[in-house]
Image (cartoon, rainbow, N blue to C red; front, top):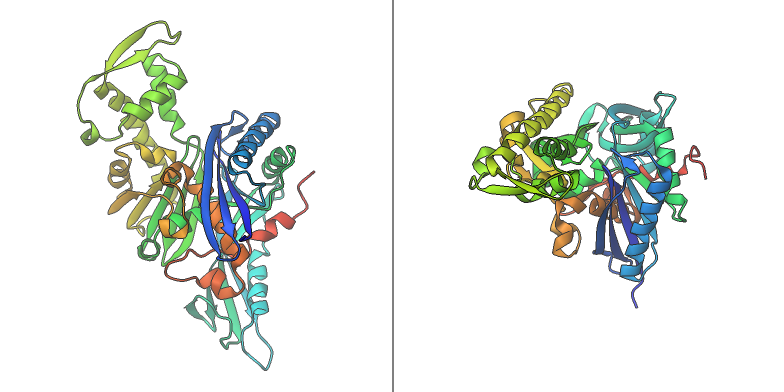
Length: 417
């Protein structure tokens, strides 16, 4: 019988936890997603733990249910972090090769990356992930894999993510308390981009937008690499709040109305029929026109995309992205792509899910709700299977590429037991 490991990607989102379990066949090096689940969690707000007991209980329920459903124990748990406490920026590292033999080795590349990582960060922050963007040899840029090439001066550009050590520690503790171990943490947007965007989109210039409930993650890709990323502390739960307040109904009813009848752009309104709205006490109902729901939703959606526009304007890459890719639960509402085109000035916008050639999975797991969790599982196998630098960084036309240095995070000692 082929040996398999069960890998779980856990996405700690906005008031919910989403996980995908995947079986990794070690003999054939194939990955198959076999189960997924998303549950509400009141102990998490915008990716930050607000109640460790509540979060631990939800983690225990979620992961136990996946183990029962798959009849397998979790071999690896990959945790994707998000939240407004995260900060991302680019940095530059160099390494002088003074040997007579100028052939560049893996050690030389590692030392250049270490140099790029050696920079001051806020005292309360910890390094989460370092993602390599590209190399240069003797001032010639655009080198993807310098190993085996000759040169005297090696340079590397990296994309660094840091986060609050306190928040990250609390998140890790909420998972270890029920008896699970976090094998790796990473910024969820990084694997998401490599699994949802095509190489052509990243090369031409693309903006990835993960529309969550309480946060939105934005990444800008230029010439194939991630140049800018930011988590924004606003999300699509604001739409639910608006509907609840203006329709005088509970948040749960408002959420159901949003998901069933909500549209974000006028051309997506098929008719102006009526919708029954339960009262706050649930004893009576009243009717409203669908057009009124649009009148509530559209201004809020425009405001959310204007927030994205504001952050992108400060990135230095405002006019670079051509394509836009929306993912996450908020991307499912009709008209969101139209609003992105209208406000962000992108030429083309689509809703994205994980590329099907990267993993075998039931159709329901290709829902954008599971995109980040599934990307985390793929990320793990890309890291574990890579035996040389080309596999990890250069990749192929049909495979995603990930940084080899992501795993160093779990070796840091600032987490408590």
